[in-house]
Length: 131
Image 1 (cartoon, helix red, strand yellow):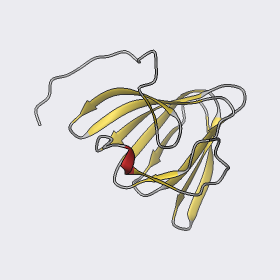
Image 2 (cartoon, rainbow, N blue to C red):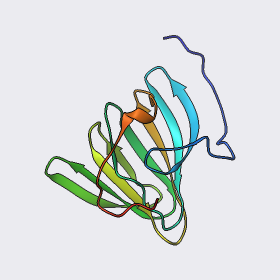
Image 3 (tube, rainbow, N blue to C red):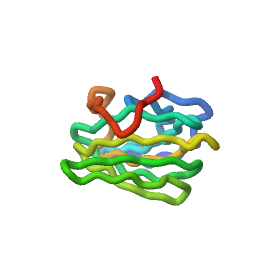
Image 4 (cartoon, rainbow, N blue to C red):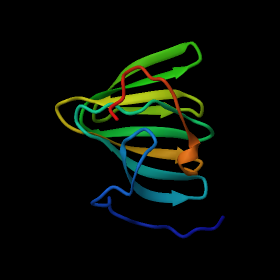
């Protein structure tokens, strides 16, 4: 696919709410990947999900929190803070939460591009999610 290059700024308002409950600001998209900005309000817990086919790489921009990930018998919970980068391979169960001190913000690269809300499978997570 032949596409021209693009430039944009972070939108002022969210474009959507992700299946996990975080606010999404859609950034740019190419044929093999897309990027978005995610924000979870202070003290909130996302809904646990797994992606059917897409893989993501996240980079935390601001705030503090935790991310739980599970693949089969392997699971871990990691601290999220500015500068943290992590991967979410397809099929990985994951859930995240923001500290009470402020919102958690990250950018994520999705490969292939995000296909839509049916991509995320709801799951039972590590923490009770805020509804």
